[in-house]
Image 1: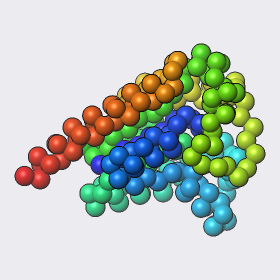
Image 2: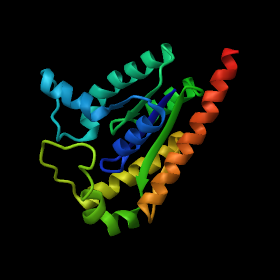
Image 3: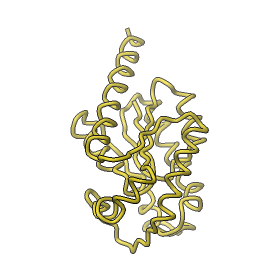
Image 4: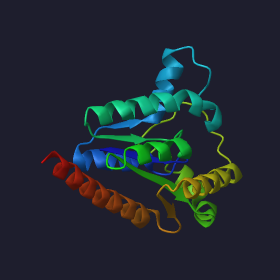
Length: 193
């Protein structure tokens, strides 16, 4: 099973992947690690601070290749990060409905307005340290979440919108992923019999 967790930066994707690793022992790949590996190890055409639209054409083919390789080998993997274009993720999920589970994490406008400095930016380095300056702007950040929600709706992708209490709402995502994972594993087990 492949679990794809995506959304804007600082939305808890890596934290959620870490929890799935602890619970299920599913390894996870951070797309940021792939990005930084390409930046540090090759003469790539983008930098860590370039916008998503510039980076996606370079990263998505690599991410998709990793996912397809894991599906072919019937291996479990959590892939978390930005740079997951909804149109391509939707196509992948439709192609492999029993093997690919997707969730995008989105913050409501009010949540961003009320928690931007204290919680969103305040917790951005809980799991990973970023070795570059980040100039995240609240207006751009809000627009990114609005865009992600619109594209998830357009392509029929599941998302959770955090509106008030991050801890309980992200726990609900975790619980939902557990239920869907268990159902998918039962389907896969039945197909093996």
